[in-house]
Image 1 (cartoon, rainbow, N blue to C red):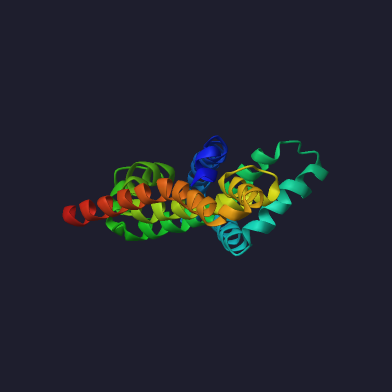
Image 2 (cartoon, rainbow, N blue to C red):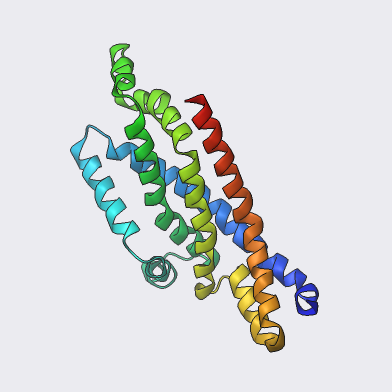
Length: 215
C-alpha cells in the first residue's frame, strides 16, 4: 500500500479530472438528451426524423470513434480546443441519446390524457411538454438516468486514450512505475471509481423505492 499512499496526490489529480468530465458531460448530455427526447415526440416530422437518426447513429457508434473524431478530425475544421474540452464534447454527445431514450420511456409512461388535458386548456406543444409531460417523465426516469450517469463515470476512462490525465490514465502510469505493486495500484483506482458509482447507485435505489411507494 506504500505505492498508493505515496501517490495519493496523483490519484486525487486524476480523480478531479474524472469528476470534471462526469459533471460537465453529464449536464451537457442531460440538456441535449432532453431536447432530443422532446423532438422525438414533436408533431413536426422533420424534427422527429432528425432525432431518430441522431439517436440511432450516435448510440450505435463506439465511444472511441466519437472521441477520435473530436480530438483529431475537428481540429482540421478549425476547431481549436484542449483535449480535455474535446473529451467533454465527445462524452456529452455519446451519452445524450441514452439520456433521450430514458426520458422517452418516461414520456411514454405519462397517460395520454395529460397531454389532451393540456391542449384542452389552450397549451401549445412546447408548453405541454415543458409544463406537463416532462416534469412527470423526469420523476419516472430518475433511476434509469442515474444508471446512465454511472455508465458515463466508467466511460470517462476512455478519455485517457486521448491525452486526458483522468483517473484510469493515472492508474496506468502508476502501475508502469511501480511494477511490484500493480494490484494495489489498480485497487486504488477501483476504490476512487466506487466513491462515485456506489453513492449514485444507492441514490437510484432509494428514489426507485420512494416512487414505488407513491404509486
